[in-house]
Length: 503
Image (cartoon, rainbow, N blue to C red):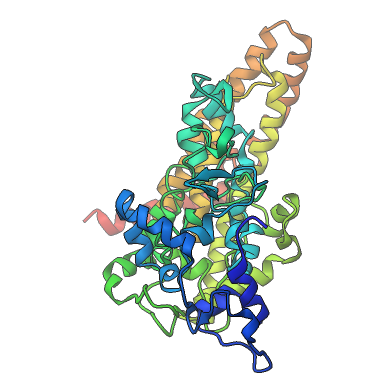
């Protein structure tokens, strides 16, 4: 075991986890605590009766050297339960990141595997979620951007003698997480630490970082419930959920009623302990009258809008080998319905989901599916077919789905109309018609003029597909071939508009 566990061994004998003790649970009626256990720390009704000698020694020093950390820990539930520095940071001799610290074996990183000694259920849910797998982005096109297009290998560290990109280290890795590299003596490579990326790959082999949301050393549930907590990562051009939330009626209600949200309550059930507004945690994680808290944020999501084409979440879970592969989207949607029913009636919820689904299908069918098919045919027509971001086609397709398409879909999912339209479908359409299509036409011409037979043949196939797409019902207006019935509807709508305002 990585952490010294004599306290937890005592609790196990009582049929308890430390999480249960901190919540105030009592031993089963059949449990008898014998005098033979007396030398171990004795559990009180809300934690351990005494602080370990090792933690007391840590605290005496950190009180002087790191007073803010000491104060944060002092107002935490860990402090109230007599869980100190050593209970979390103690290490075994053979741990990969063990270091000698004032004659104690410790490790700097407290990983989910460590937290699971007391919070087993929470960690099990978390490690089965997409959050914990965020570090798997390493090697993706996002990293090609940060490491090659935006960066270089000038950031040389002991763990990376060939260098690394500062753009990736300071950007991508701080949200997604990176693989933490251990140097001799248990110190951590500066390219990979500090890092609280939610999918951090830890020296003990575990994935994830609990402190990504429960910032140390207070580990506050109140902070984790606040929308700002999610804004460290869920913000920006490609995943602006925090900004969408702020625009929505939900976010407006939260800001108007922050003092009524009871966010520091140990029990935080929507409809019982608060009712003025939902936060991100309310919808995706927190308890309802019918559901417990979950640390798998995918269990209430019925579309995965991260890919270029939206898919059902069980599909992406299966690809990643996650337990959610066995949970169909209909079950997850019903889980979210249960949250919504705290404030809305069933008819309202059903109609909202019809609106949301229609936007996802619009994006998928009109832009994403034909756009992806065109890009697959465009790659062999390029001069550098295996290298991304070297042609306008690459950039246009990337921004269409990765930035603009995500904004449209996320905006609809969270009722942010400006992000759905002006930052979403408007930008998707603008990019498709004024950047992507012209870039494809230019590529076809370049390939035909290159003298390269393979490129020219690829361009022929691309030209046929582009002609097919643009002549489809969704796009033929762009060629001046709008359906006559639609032309008539547009004229009538313009006439009615002028009648309303030209007075």
